[in-house]
Image (tube, rainbow, N blue to C red):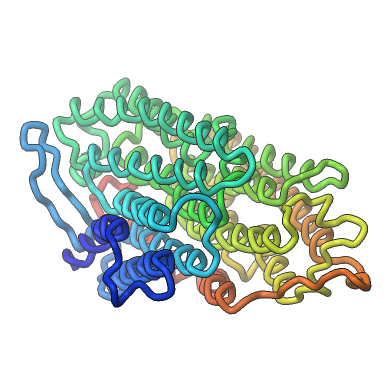
Length: 517
């Protein structure tokens, strides 16, 4: 188990280095590009297999216990350690990251985005995977920061080199926002480490803030929370996200929405909640207020983009929808209750599955029509996917209703539990305030349903294909292979939520109790 977790974290880095080397003569295939793309599929496939084996070997009777741990001294003078481990909170995120990266590598093997070389693309994809996996596996504050930052450069280049129109400006906006947030976060992490005399996240969580004064906790939560909020992203620190999603290649958008946004909310759960609970309690009402503001803002922005005549971009609309969905995650965390935090973790996974699928589908629509502009797609002839590409249209409608939180699909449980958590927040938090937040969040679900149904009506419905207009391709074999796992898991998580909640709940209970359970 220790070896598996180390392989999962370090394996993609080794694969990235190997991708830059010349391919052996017997493995070149039809071209060097095909060889390196096949290498990317192989490495990400091995990492996914290792993550599945790790999940199967995980002691599901004790999900609150940190398992597969490695603890090696790295910088002795600062007591910085290479400390890895996985519990019921981090395991689902590890598997989700490995799955989405493999599906992106598989998709890119058949449809590499135009831009730089295939070698650079595969190497950057693997470095991005390694950084994301490390973020969910490390148990040292310094290592967490390094892993958190490791993903920025590969994502910057994926947007800047392989993106679409406006890619340079979007890439710079992404890197500047997240770097500035990270600088502030680093100060907060160092403050905790210096004052507590350790950077060990397990020891700090077990101490549950008892070794830190309230003022230190408040300052630390403000600094760390700002850095995490940028990555989440929380309104009003979200403005880099729509530009980045609109300009990014399809696989870049999938990974950005599917796993990178989860790093911010994971930091709130793993670091802020257990290590500085008094500071978190001070800021929880403000976090909840910004969360529900993001829910309403994201939904209203999507409604405006979906309105005929506004030249709304479908990728941009899905990006704004992420602001709203991540608002539910932040609301659940702000309640500081097991119900709310479990809802936040469930919504994290559901958002990764559903929004990852949506960006795959929107990318496919854009490839076929040459645009993601809603007015063009729903123009005089109409995209009419039900009639022209029925399987593609059905999948887009399925992803849309999953995103709006239809009961029986993954999107429902996380949002519902987050709202239940707001109904009865933790002791010390204002219940009338959180009841207000709950009501606003519930209204946001109605707005979400409204804009997604408008999108389905405008893109999927319409008249028959006019005579003489060329047909468009329906779902191809490689697309079917890349999208089917996301559809299946969306249904499984919706019908059998206990699979995920059974992992997260004991770990959350222990985390909120300061490691005493």
